[in-house]
Length: 323
Image 1 (cartoon, one colour):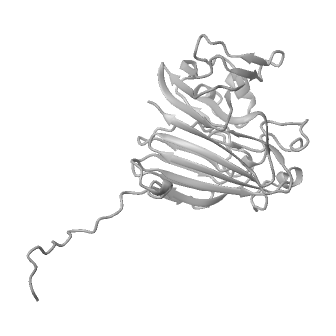
Image 2 (cartoon, rainbow, N blue to C red):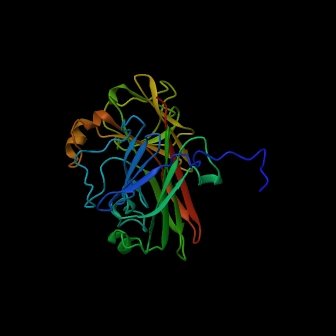
Image 3 (tube, rainbow, N blue to C red):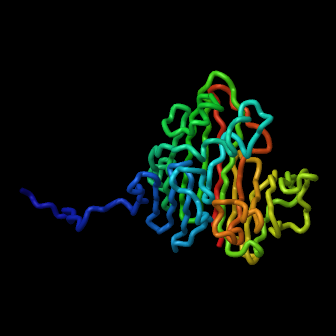
């Protein structure tokens, strides 16, 4: 054999893929946990496809979850990110949804885990940061569908709900497809409970001059947020449906902490029960927990989204960490 002067050297080791996100199931298959190689994590309960935890790389929790929340599928979860579909609240005057329970059936159905994708696969190329997306599905034919849906909302539909975790953000998105022969109306909302240290030191910007519906002030509910002061503070029970133009930012002690961006979701609900209301909510614990949470809930709830046969409604939120 003739020797080769430029014979390549042997590789000392086989190059491997960069560290990937890990996805695990609980022993009872009731929840899915995903963790990035950088340490950030999410936990999603299959009941309601409810995100019940979102932690940054240091293990700091970003979502508020009631200590009395039911995680056994017996009732909707108090805290995290419950998914509202196809009705926000109750709608006794709306013929299609008048008999549905409050906030519909998505949050009280058991969803199917459809799988994961990572930054190596998403968009067909590697991104600059690790990312993991978890997909969940619910349809009119699903065995886990709340029985009230079959009885009171007899449309054929298919829902795909995606939860995407990046080092500095969390995105939740929904695609609601009408598989029926006739159109249906729906409302969608992501009931996000953000964790804060002290609600009295929170300021919410991005709502100046926005019209809103004040559900606490039943005598005069239709209002417009003043241009000044630019930031909204929470000083008592608050339940408002805003229609802002742009992003909403939550600051604490004048330090921006969260920015909420919406895609095809025209409304933002700002909710805090305050002391008296918290006392009256059975699964709200501890009772002073209102001091450590703020609901910023992107949704399409100001009216009805009419989805024609064969068509779909899509909406999403992205919560970005700023501190």
